[in-house]
Amino acid sequence: MPLDLTPALRLYAAWRRRRLAALDPVAAQTRELTRLVRAARDTAFGRDHGFASIRTVADFQERVPLRRYEQMWEGYWRPAFPVLENVSWPGRIPYFAVSSGTTSGSSKYLPLTPQMRRSNVRAALDVLAFHAAAKPGSRFFGGASLMLGGSTALVEEAPGVFSGDLSAIAAMTLPRWAQPYAFPPPDIALLADWNEKLARIAGAALDRDIRVLTGTPSWVLILMERMRALRDARGETARATLPDLRLFIHGGVNFAPYRARFEAMFAGQDIDMREVYPASEGFIAAADRGPGEGLKLSLDNGLFFEFVPVDELGAARPTRHWAATIEPDVNYAVVMTTCAGLFAYVIGDTVRFVDTKVPRLLVTGRTSYMLSAFGEHLIGEEIESAVSDAAWAIAADVTDFSVGPVFPERPGELGRHLYVVECAAAPGADAAARFAALIDADLQRRNDDYRAHRADGHGLHAPEIRIVPPGTFAAWMASRGKAGGQNKVPRIVTDRALFDSLTAFAAARS
Image (cartoon, rainbow, N blue to C red; front, side, top):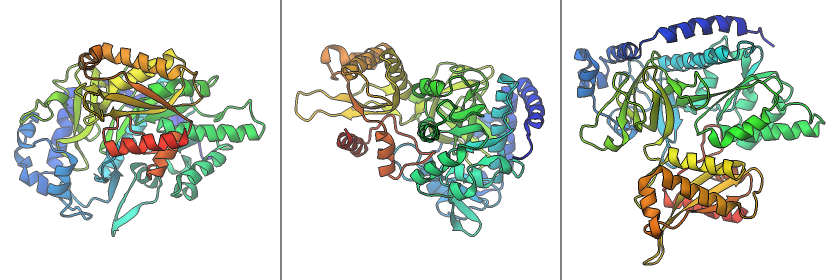
C-alpha cells in the first residue's frame, strides 16, 4: 500500500478551513464572476455579450440572459461539436461529461475543461477537510478510496476529444499523487457490464484496505449487500463489511430514505457519512456540519451562482439573486456560470437556503421535479419528506420509490397518485394502506393546493401504494440501459410512457 498521506492532508485541511472561515461570500463571488468574464471575453460567446465591458454583477445580469442546455447547445455548441475551440471558453474543450439530465431526456454533452477538473479536485479536498475537522483521529488517506461510478470507457468524439460519464473522466484524469489510492483498478473500472462490474468490485474489495467510499446510496447499498453475502459465505459473519472504512461520501439523491439502513450497516464503526452536491456542471456544495444543517456553497472555486425563485423561472425578467441577495426558505432554481464555459445556465436543480450569511443549502428537487398532473403542485422535497416520515412511522425499510399520476379513464372519475415502493423486507399485511394514509395526511399538512384537491374527494382520490419485491428498481433501471453509479431512480415520473413501463415491469415481478 502506498504511503499514508493523512498527515499531509491534515495540514492542507487546516489551512483550507482557515481560508474558508475568513472568506467573505459576496467578495468571493464577485471575484469569481470577474475572472470568468475576463477569461472568456475573446470567445464567440464573450464577444456576442460584450464581456470586455462587463464590470459588475448587474452588468452581467443585464447582458447575459438565462439559458437552458438546449439554447446553449443549439446556439453555440452543436454547430462546432465535437471540436469546441474558443466557443464559450478559451482553447479547445478536451472532455464532455455526458448526462441525461433528469429521468428520460436525451443525452447532454457538457463541456469539461482542465480548469473545471482542477475545480472538482479542490472541491473533493474540501470534503476531506470537513471530515478531518469532524473526525480528528481518522486515518482517511491510509488506504484505498472506492468510487462507485459509471463505466470508465470514454468515447473519442474527435482526435483528443473524449466524452463519457463524469465519474469516468474523473477516474481517468486523477492527479498523479492520488492515482495509487484509487479503487477499483482499471481492469475492473473499464467493464461496461454493470452487474459484472459490481460482482468484481465486491470480490476485490473484500481484502482491500478501503478507507473512503463514494457513490449514489441506492447503488452503494447493492454493492454492500453483495459484499456482505461474500463475507458470510467465507464464514466472516462477525466482521464488518468494510472494516477499515472511515468516510462515506454520498450525493445525487435525498439520503433520508437510506440513512437508517446505512446506520445499521455501519453499526459499531466510527464512520463519517458526509453529503455532497456534485453536478455535471460543477461541484456545487458539501456538508461541513451535521445532517440537515445544509451544504456549504463552493464560493471560491471557479463557479458563480445565481438563484431564481422557481415561480419566476418562466417570467420575461425573473429576479436573479446571488450571494448578496439570497433569502432563506425560498425555493430557488440554480443558475451557474463556470470555468467550463457555461454562462447564466439553468442547470435544472432547485434548492432552499437554511443559512445565508455563510450560504448553506438543501437540495429540494428539479425544476421539472414537480407532481402537478391535477393542479396539486407538489415539489420533490415535500414528497420525499412525506415518504421518509411515513416509512419511519410504520418501520418500513424503504430502498427506493417512484410516484406518478394515474389519470381517470371515464367521465366523473378522479385521478390519484400511485407510489411504487421497494422495501428491503416485506412489510406487514396492512402496511400499504397505513403508508398511503400517512403520506396523504403529511402532504395535506405541507401543501395547501394538495389539501384543497383532496378535500371531500374534490379533485383527487387518496394515494395508492404498491409494494414491490427487493431488486425491482435495479432490474427496471438495467432494462432501460440505466444501470450504473451515475443513474438515479426517478422519484417523480410525469412521463406517462415511462411510468407505464415501471408499473408494468413491477407487476410482472410481483
